[in-house]
Length: 279
Image (cartoon, rainbow, N blue to C red):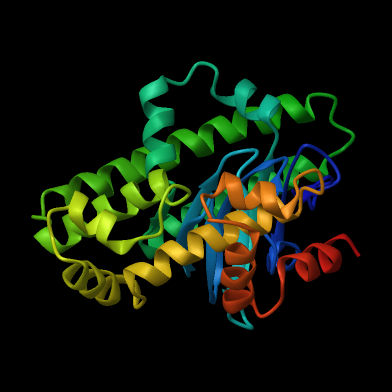
């Protein structure tokens, strides 16, 4: 598995502007956690194999050891990146209620209105100044306090926005789509059959694909195949697993079936992908 040995800051915390170019093309397990605030442009990323679309004024909260890939991004895409280690988030949030932390993890992607977005940017700029003041003996403690303030302020703003959204009735189609996404992430390594997921939702495979097409513009099969393709790429990056072992792990009949699936989706064989990655 590809490990980002050194995050794009010199220490285990920091604030900088970025285009996320270091996360393009391959799934990457991040050693640090990140809060990403999109300044301009847009990007399609996956976080732990879940598709996310970052647009202007959106914030993403990504925990350490998450697996992230930048699938595509606009030429003008820029984000403000707040980086923190496990130990830093522990220091910042050890007094934070666990329900608050769980809420932030469940609602890790959120778009702020313009005035709130500007407040978040102002706070990040203050944090960047604290980070750059390397002569301050209390620099890490100050940064941890700012991180806690940023975290709690984000919870407050997102909680109020989510409360407003929950007052709106969710359509049956939206509810089915959410259930499909959750069920797919739990079972994609077991089976890729759309009939399995549609049956669990008590709907037809055709209706399930119509739902996914309307929400994310791809079929249910394409969505499931994308999940398994990213999983294969991650496992190929681990040189200790043979291709046959990967096929067994992901419930392919044999490595020939996995090879045909992978080449059809990525254009190269699993062996070629592994060699190109390690080069």
